[in-house]
Length: 434
Image (tube, rainbow, N blue to C red; front, side, top):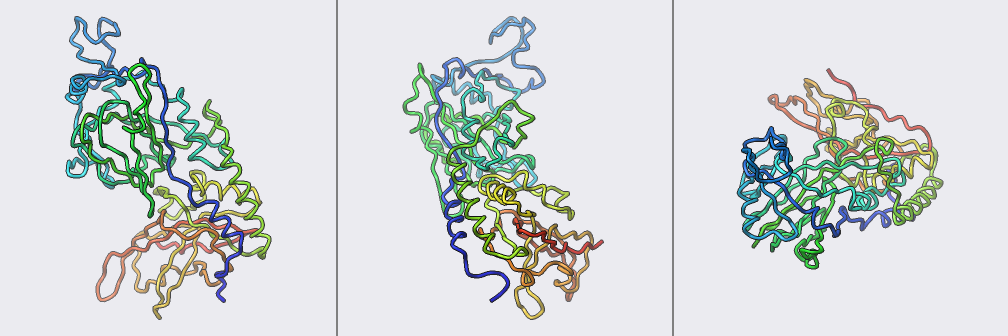
């Protein structure tokens, strides 16, 4: 039998079962005061350098003797005419494609107001939504050490015929782990948010969730999800869907006044996984390696891609990745974030390698692909068990110049994973070519 263990310990099945079925989102409704839904907005988007309420007369009013032009509507009871006025004040909403911001109404048809163009008394921190996100999406046992912060991003309006095809959000920072969308109780039909991951799909039907909202006792609907979740907005068939979007970031609790406690469910799951992991580790030698495929996608920095160690990535782990990492550390295991490469040798046999860093390839000129992995640890030379399956959720690309009949630009891709062991494992790093 290969040193890469094929048979599976019963604890592996229990660990995988405990981590399965965790939805990559959380959602709900929340009652609000009527006044908190007063949306003040600028009628003209040309005066973006002036604060909304910076009228010379210094009055918090929407009409005055100065030239300031603004309006207000209450999102709990907005009329079609008021919503049309709001729509008239908006600009078309672009979207990110790779490193570019593009406008393409065949892919996204929506409107937006930038932060400088509107004001809303709504206070997210007072709703309890942030705490629920903490409990549901940050389910590692160190949740009291790692809190989250929110960043208001944009107000969007989807009127009749508007939509946004399936896409993933582009993380704006390595600490960004998800998005929060608030849907206001404006009258509309359609515009459901559809989330999907792997073979699963969930539909967030805000109009149905907000059926109990009234002008006198309004509610909002909300959904928060990880950045690697594919999502789309189905076409709005009538009315106007008005939303606020927040970016979600990890933030150390020592830097924030928000101290979020762990959820009972997360504690229970953590204790079970830690117990099973301890049983698994005890059944193997000290030099045995335990591999964990990452359940989520994480952005790699330029430093990471230049061949630096990836261990700092663990600070931004979320969901089951954070839970597994914390359990390993609490058991005293040595944990490292590694890259798994695989390629065919000259005999067309698949060979797999582990490296503690991304291949560094500035100006490489390679005549034989196996030279890429020179001195790297070969998986067949170590004893290793995959506790959670390998994934391609986080991949590292390295480019090089390949020589055959003629020179061409080629790439190799590595799958980022986590490796733990009782003893200190010294994986051989990728060769540094310059």
